[in-house]
Image (cartoon, rainbow, N blue to C red; front, side, top):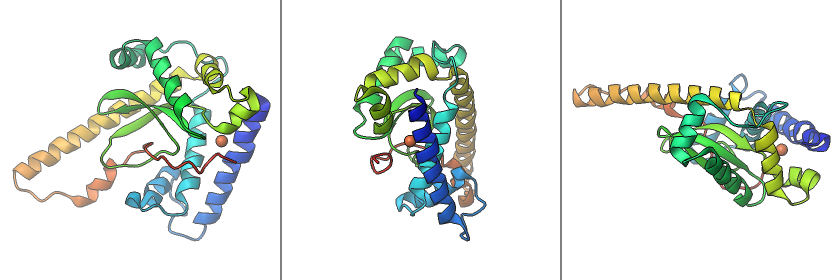
Length: 228
Ligand SMILES: [Fe+2]
């Protein structure tokens, strides 16, 4: 990744999202919340509030930087590799599907490897998207905005994605996220099991617990973020 690309996404995009978000939350109920909580609150059950896009894109960029390391790439190991082989057939097949999801994202956007319903899956989208229906935890993403392609590879998006997967991605970070995602999925299953039992026994369910089920998801097809 070139210095220009890094400076563009770090010094321009990321900075702008954070500064705009800071202006939007100052003096409001959002001030003092964590970034993830701001995303969930401003998603507002689908009736999006103004700060959502800045918050989600700031989160996107955080997540993106943390997904890379010098001398990254190669092949993952452990649980992550086992699950990739189980759910995609082979590591090579996963790379193919991931690159394809990134390359077919129209305009700016991101490709994601997500853990949902105890399986790994590949998606493309713009923002992390909280949803109560589609239980999904984001594990890794590729760079897929228009700008880095313009700066680095002049419309050769597949090459850019290949460099990310072969030389930059930190599989250690991805493995850590996977372990967290699995732990949260297991917790959620236990909580659901507990609720089912309570319902069967006729006890009133605690509605306030519902918010605990919200996670960060990626099913937004808006494309108003990185197309500067
Ligand atoms: Fe960016």
